[in-house]
Structures are given as structure tokens and as C-alpha cells.
Length: 231
Image (tube, rainbow, N blue to C red; front, side, top):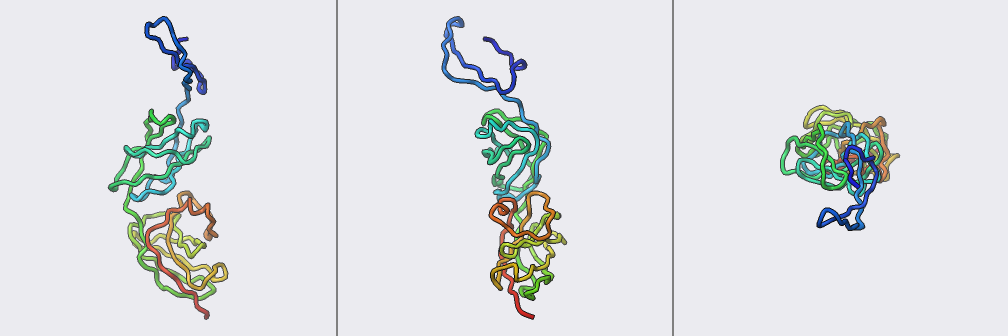
């Protein structure tokens, strides 16, 4: 049977036969499956750290039955998709050797890559240097100034006091502002403080972090501590 690619229904599988004389064909027992190209609309987020490791989501229309062979490619670096659904696929961002913009493409068979009008911007890794003050009332609402490096404008920055994350206000590339939660919501009077940036838009100003939440936030380098004191 001769098949024209533009007439094959997506999802159809056909047997592969071979011949050495163009007359006698032998069935190899191998199936070849035709698939429809994915449709990719957006990439979220479209920027991230050169250190990699964050979850990148591509939104569009995908073939879930091909998930085990679906790849993302950032520049020339290929990574296996960590999740494929009808409307989105996710990949862990690979590390890069330098800051800059790279093209993003996907493959649904691990070989053929679709060219897409999508790009990703690698930037220097953000980090936490200091917080001030380093102590405050057990009732919370102490205003904290976070000094860091390589911060960027976003509403998705959070200060993380142990397992409690509170929304931070971006002030500059080296500064965030946030307020402490009350000690009652924590398990210790001395807590580790970190800053993190959520991959997707978050509506809550305060989040009780679960294990699944840590896969949605890119935590900056650096740790500080805050001590709760009685008034």
C-alpha cells in the first residue's frame, strides 16, 4: 500500500515492509504511527535562571499518547518532557552556559523538531543576600527589606518563612519588600527565610507551602534567618 502523508489520518499505524527488488515485500513486524503536529501558543515563564531546574510550561494542543517520546529543546539542549496533557506540556529547564535568548522547539518522537515562534531568555541567577530587620514581634506584620541580586520585576515574588510564603513587592533589581507572618502559623521562633518566584500567576497573598508547591516556585540562592520576640 502506498501512502501519501497528506492523506493519512493522525493516529493511524501502518506496518513497515521492505523489499530488495521492489516486487517482493517482507513484513518487518514494525509499526509506524502518524501523528498530528502539536499546536503551541505560549511559554510560561519565558525567562529563567542560567542554573536551570525550573518547570517550563508550553500551552497549546498536544498528543498525550506520545508523552513518553516528547521532548523540549532550548537552543540545542534537549530534555524529556516531564508531563504531557491535552492542553499543556512541561519540561525542566536545562542549565545554560551564558545569559541570552534561545529558540524553543518540541519533538513528539524524539527526532523531528517543530520550529515555533517561541523564545526563552536566560538570565543571571537571583540570590538573597540579607534581610532587615532580623527579628520582630510574634504577632507578625513586621516590614522586611530583602536585599538580593539579579531580581526582576514581577508580582510573583514571595518571601518564604519556613513553610509560609507571603507576597513580596518588587522594589528594584536588588530589593524586595514583604511582611512577616505571625509566629502562630509557624513551628519555631527562629525560621529560615528564602525568596522564591512562582512560575505561574498566584492570587493568594499568603501560602501554606505543601510539597507540591515547591515544584511551582523557583527558589533563589541564599538563606537568612528571622527571630520572633515577644512584645
